[in-house]
Length: 254
Image (cartoon, rainbow, N blue to C red; front, side):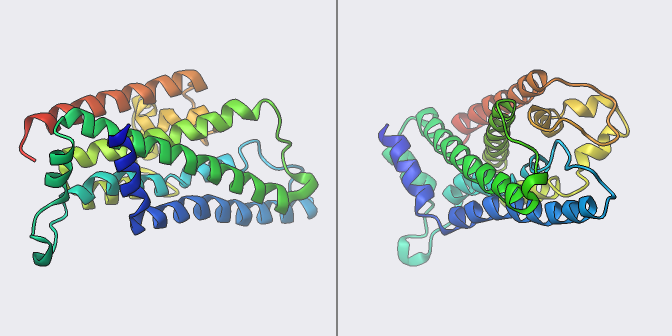
């Protein structure tokens, strides 16, 4: 618990993590407000009759940029070289001195990332769905019991995405490459989505499978994957990556 508390304290004291939190909440809620305003205009003009079933949820899929930054910074910051005044060392040396067990250190850091990502996802989901309800008013999709598992899927997706970013950064020991690649893949037309146009197997890549936990209608997608299967597939990807990352972290020099 002490190791977990220490890692949580590191995250809380990092300005970049707070920026990531703001981005994670603002990106989906602002996009949801804009798209809902456009939908409301279409409804009032008679072009559309109701908002889509995935209103709000699609925007939450883009909001993971916040937890991507969180997952990357959580471990890449350990490898930053300190200033000469501070000794010119790296945080990882101090961290492993305080927690000699590398697996315990890595597990504590992963747990801190997962818990923070889950909390951020809950706040972002509340802000995004609130924005949809405020903008669309009576035309907003009604939130009911069916939305509980979908919102739980959003939280799982955000946590898993953060852990994917974390695991990749453990392997690279540098934040630039995973940050650039993963954020680019959260754009409007993702690389993995384009791959599904080439082979149906791309639907089982972690992000494409994971979004099935909460998005019901994927455009131009003929491969049916249930929310449960999508969640299990993403779980398998995350577990495999974290095991590989843990093995690499314990066997190589800090």
